[in-house]
Length: 251
Image 1: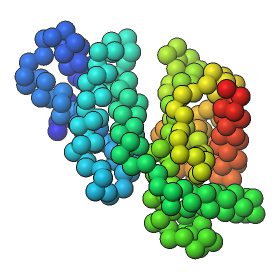
Image 2: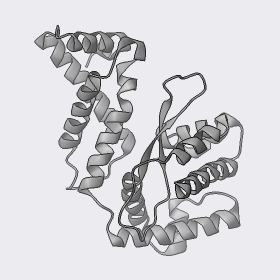
Image 3: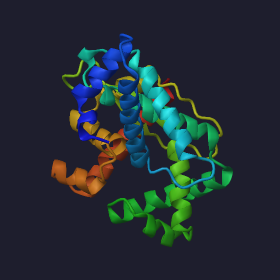
């Protein structure tokens, strides 16, 4: 695909023409290609594991439909359409995977054991343990740990509205809240207390959460960005999650 077609001004122009009903067949084909390319990139960021349950073409179709639905809510004053539609695409894919792949009890048992051991090792060593360390400590295969955590994370992602400084619209933050391995159901509704808790967090802490959970930036790179140790970044992240968990219990 030509790089020019992905330029924000080109995409915005095509979306605007579509909203006005002035899009030619060729332009519509270009727009579909651009959106498919974006969805494909989002799937690569999600790192969806190989599974017979998840057909990549189906996931791309779901993402494309979400993007086109979002066009009805876009206007030029809302900036780059591909950025504007990112969270809707991302959320639609996650929702589909959660419906198709509920966390089995075996995976919840693994998650519970791994998280307890992770807390113990972090307290003992002052840093978040790696998957290989957890595998060695628990005797659970590293691949099983990754798969179980992936399913749990996809199942317990929460979409939060977070005011980011000078943004009037706010930025949407996807935060993975620790789940209860004995709980079969998840409540996807955020309470006002949880939203308020995010607004009270220091700006740096909000940005660290966004870097880790939304932008998928490795913890070591976040530490370099803020000139902190990896252990300190982990402490900040866990502190924020505890605050959200407490706020959730107040709703």
